[in-house]
Length: 328
Image (cartoon, rainbow, N blue to C red):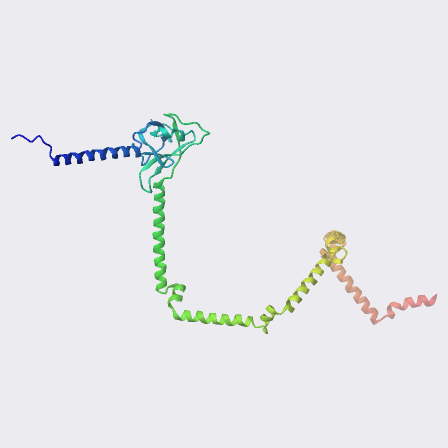
């Protein structure tokens, strides 16, 4: 049986749907290519890194936060002593933005969102520096290490958890009436005693404010203040007189004559003490020689006996003297 050469309406409708779908796909591809700069003319720049954690080939390259290209290649370099150049990253950048990337532009790794993919972000340069040519090297700068931040955040979370546990223990103890604060919160007797103490304190303060009391008069009566002011003025006058160079105290404080005389007296006393302490001198012999002491003691005793005998019989000692006077 032969098919009809005529195209049915259903076939046309299917063909139309397929054509519309192809057009939509083509338009979407074109728009996606424009958004990702897939059809733009590009040139390559090089960045040397120590680590490219999270960055992958095909990843995004941004300029001041705007998408301008992709990461074309990530290569390992030969092992050497320069640990800042472990990787060679080739970035493919839109050629139309070449004027923006200059000698002072810097590259750094950034994160799209808090936990998103890593992108290679380039900062715009200034007119003072030349435009980078294809194959030139961008300077890499350190960026924020989110892994280290997360580690510190985890440590901070542990501290917060520990603090929460401690606070729970403290509040539990307070609720159970443990300690002074717990007693204040739960013990009615302590509350009443504290209230009574506050009442007594208020009464004491009220007595202080009584104008007829001692403290009230000290606070309100200016007489004590005036007397204290006068006493301070008198003391100031005394200090002025003491500081005067013409007065006795001033001369004692400033004149060196008295000091010189005292030094001379001290030296004379020192010499006298030296002479007294000399064992070869008379005073030294008196102080140290026992024989001389005994002789002086005996002489004193004999003189005392003679004087006592003279008092008893003075004629015995004056007879010859009277005769001699009368004979003349």
